[in-house]
Image (tube, rainbow, N blue to C red; front, side, top):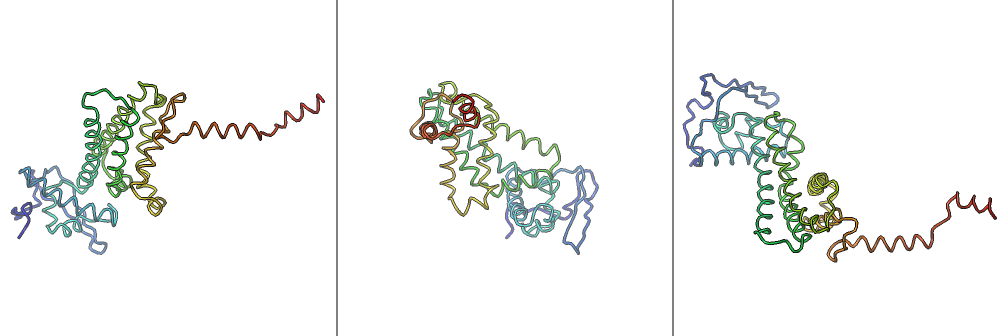
Length: 285
């Protein structure tokens, strides 16, 4: 039996709303099917059926994009994997690029939602007594959500350039909103003199990149650390990065101030005289 989202007549599945048919160019020797663009809109109007269909097609397309690459995957292969015809694909998406856009927006939206939910749950209108713990809880939760979409993240870095400028714009806007949420989580620490306000927006983007490194540097990290270990150490690194120069060292942090003091004392005891100092001793015996 066909899935509910497939239960639709495909007697003329690729006829666009403007009456012109899709032009399908095939190069069978290379296994590539190209579908010409038109101004048609997807034909499925029922919201639930459309959602189920896009999820099924998007899930199969993501698997193929991750395995073979976006450009090396044909619409025919996506259709075969989803168990539908090529024409059926275009009842749910206008173009192959829109499938990629849907995949990236969906995964990115999950991260933004998780981050917003974490901040909402922690704030609840109450004063923040421990801004360091407040930020740490939010950032580690954000990092954990990033670790769960590792393959989506890699696809985003590799293939966002394949989208049009109009399709990229909402993706970039959401990434800026994520950075703004991290800034909002840092501000209570700034107000209480624990975190530095210097280059705040830039630091928020650094924190995003540190979380993304689990996917981008997977070849070096995955065999040495678990996702839980990485998230824990990431939180400690984030706290160390944000501390104000004169902020009191917190027990749960990296305690870099104490370590630095010890190194400075040892360095003072064994410091060598500079060449200028030695020349001065010769000139003034």
